Length: 400
Image (cartoon, rainbow, N blue to C red):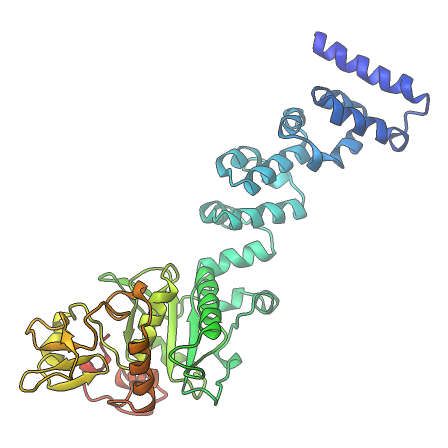
């Protein structure tokens, strides 16, 4: 009772101090002064001048906002939810927005949805989506991308704003480069990761300038049903027959959500949580480099039985001597395999990075390849998907 009496006394004091009409416009400076000086009186001032207080909610303390929210002030509840989300306190924010979301105006809903995206609250966004309450705007578009929704659901305005393409028809090759690479992703994080990889590569191209050129990232949704299979990321490329592919590209980078990285038939499969070092490692596979850790059993059965230089970094010495300076490799169990360096390389442990020795080997392989490189169109032809350029001879050519 004493607190409520004090609040009324404050209102009376404000009225007596002003000596003016009770118009909100005249009293605004006094109200704002006392809100700032006496936070405990926020409720009293709100009773007298709600419109003035509502225009200043963003300036109020969390404690003051709680006072107003408890008086069922919807805007105060919105400010609390927004503030907690901006601070990363998702659980506290949920108390103020989850039951009140429908009462917020469109701009408020869009702002909250944006903060939910920033905090990666995909389940909360999904709940809004399923109940038809997720407002149109960037946050909704981002959620649709993250869920690998069909490209038709993504607006061209959003795609242009975030620098990615929605169609394979939108990308072109660069004739100055040895190899052109088509960049594709099936979710939002994948788009961002590929854009980051492209930027890192362009700032320090390997093994030399104009070795590789990368297209704009093309969002393809879930057209190729990419998923983890036996720990490796795989896609159903039989669906490629239903799409028109741009001419002139040598390789594809397909980024999805999970599964270990691998190269198969001129196509790199990689997930959006993997690092640029992994990307660079896989890029070398495009040019025929082999892993320097134990190769898969199936590959060993044919590759490790060959003789001589079978890859830029793999020599099989069954009946011959390895090149001078080459060292034993664990790639093959028959202990006949050799690698260029005694030390770990990027092909054995990606975080080591690209050494000058392997950079020169890579450059030599680009300029004078040991064998014909497998492009993605070769792989498509092998599995019976057009466009057909060459016919593959055997499946062993298309392993990582």
